[in-house]
Image (tube, rainbow, N blue to C red; front, side, top):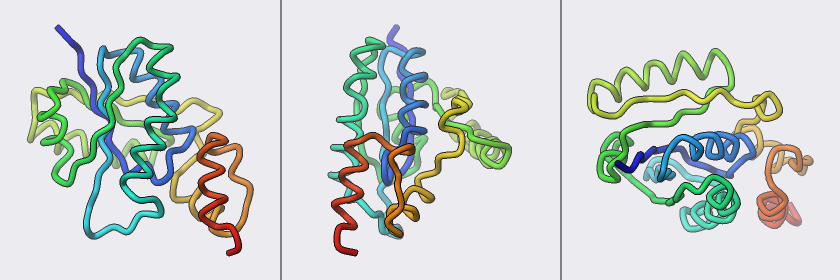
Length: 166
């Protein structure tokens, strides 16, 4: 039986915190589907295509190292519906702190009620990346700050290009 996991988010941009969760989740499944939520009410910094491309670049080494297939998809419906469509039996959710835990417990309860056949597994962020949040990375980048300790060199390059001359 193939073990399929689902990890969703906006990934705007992909941070070292995201890839930390991806790397550890990929150790636990045969196939990890990363779902980029696309919602008309949100205006992301990077386009959907750019976020897909960034995730593909950032996860190639992880897939090679773990042997797990890593697929990137987009979805505009409920995460449980996207996970079910991919055949996932587990949701992976990253936790940085107690605030994340409270929110994610509520989400796990809602998802569990809608899809009792899909379990939620919480992945505690590694200490080195526990403080990283994509919204804060965007804010630092917007103000011309150094984001090199929060994102990969390639994502940093993309952020610098986005704000060059700002």
